[in-house]
Each structure stands twice: as structure tokens, then as C-alpha cells.
Length: 142
Length: 142
DNA sequence: TGTGCAAATGCGAATCATTCCCATTTGGAA
DNA sequence: TTCCAAATGGGAATGATTCGCATTTGCACA
Image (tube, rainbow over all chains, first blue to last red; front, side):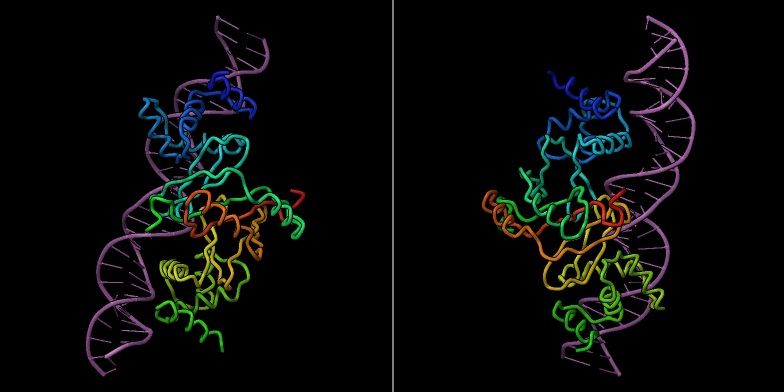
């Protein structure tokens, strides 16, 4: 199945209309291994001569995030969020505080921990945010 | 040792001058088990007839955070930060997305995981942010 | 294949936590 | 007590994100 049809399916399964902007944003995300900010996406779309408003980029990302099509990553010590198409499994990232590079980590160490918290606190866990930061191997010497 | 002297010590050990505002902020934090936002602290100080500027509250919190006297907690899905006096060990929180209550969790499940990441990615881990969210036992039924 | 209407979008203004600027005040070393 | 770097006040600036509202568009149904 070609990518655009796959995106159509994803949108339909979330009861979302399939619009050229949503497809275009999904395509930008698909073309990047690194999570992108709303503005990054906006700029890439402009470069591809796609006319869109920054508000729309935010709205689309928010919508796609609600439908679990896109995941939202909060950058530590910053008020920026970045977004990525997620496969089915959720993941976390390593942020280099020097070069600001983000590395994706597959898997998540918190599954049993969440169960423990549910037992201990009578809490119904819906999710978590985890970002790990430090120095990447290029920046390790400071 | 009385609390004020203890705060003096904490400030001195971070090469910080001991000012009445810093002491007052530390006292507010000490009097609250729940992490407070800069504005929460500002309001409490005003209620105690302490004249202070909101900028100063932010600056003091930032400084105390840098010196590891206070820890900063980012609230998921919000651009607010809250602060608490931390004992020596770091901790995480459970956020109820309905009533917005924060529950402190003692301990941290990520110590070995960080070592694993260092080995796997050649990354020097400096820290992490982890917040878990869901429904507390009062809000569990939605 | 047209029609209608809810959903999506554009665009600029508004929000809101936080930071910045710079003039004034203050802690504490000497 | 003096003096200077550090701390503070207060208001403006920032910057990411959201909101309001008029306009456009996807698509279900006729």
C-alpha cells in the first residue's frame, strides 16, 4: 500500500477527514527519523511550496496526537515540544544538552513500574513522560 | 538547629548570599508537602505580607535549582513548572489529570536503566525527567 | 454528480509562563 | 563603617502555543 493510502487509513480510523495538510504533515514526519517541532514542520512545508498556517500545523499535530497517530516529546529545560510518527510501540529519547541532538531509544523500562504504582497508590496510570539527558559521545568531553 | 540556620547553611554551601527572600521562599517550600509553582509561592509570600517581585521568585527558584537545593518538576501537558525542597534523594510524581493533584513517589526506577543507556549509546547521562499521569483513586471512575 | 453542513483552515490577536533589562538596594568581606 | 558584587523590583519583552471568527473544503447523502 502506498504511503498516502496508509495515511488515509490512519486518519479514517481516527474519524478524521483526510486533508492535504494532514497528509503533508504526516509525510514530513515520515521523512524524518528525528522528532520535529511545529515550526520545523511549518518551515519544511513552506520549502515544499505548501501553503499552510502555523496554527494549522499546531492544530493538526494536536489532533494527531490525541488520536495516537503522532507522539509528542517535551524537550527538557525548554518549552518546546517536538513530534514524531510513532510506530506502535512508544519510546523515549536521549537529549544531548550540548548539541541538542535527540537519540531515540527503543523500548521502555517502565511497564512493570507502572503496575507497581497502580498497586501501591490505587492510581490508574494512563501514561508517562520520560526524557533522559546528558552528553552524547561527540560532546562527552564538554 | 533551627530551620533558618539550616537554610543559611544550605545557601552558604552553594555560595549564595543569605537574603530574607531566599529564606522566605525556602520556608514556604518547607511548609508544603506538595510542589508549588512560582506563582503559588508568590501568592503565599504576599499573604504573609512579604513584599517581593515575581521575577525574584523565579530567579531565586532557578538559582536554588541550579545549586540542587530545590527540585523542579515539569507538569505534563502544561508549560508550568513546580518546585519542591528536596531531601537528598530525587523522586518523581504521579499527576492526576482530572483533579491535577500531585503525589510524590519515593525512589526512582531508572538507575540501572541509565547505566544500560550509557553502555549502549556511549552517552553520559546527567539526569532525567519522569512524570507519570493518570487518575487518582478519587477520580478513577472519570 | 450536485448540495449542505460539519469539520478544517487562515490569519491575526491573545495568552501565559518565564526571562530580560536596567536602575536601585543590600549582604557581608575587609 | 565602607564598598562592591550580588540580589532585587518592576515593567517590558519573549516565544511557544492557543483562540476567535470568518472562510473554505471534505465527504455523506440525495
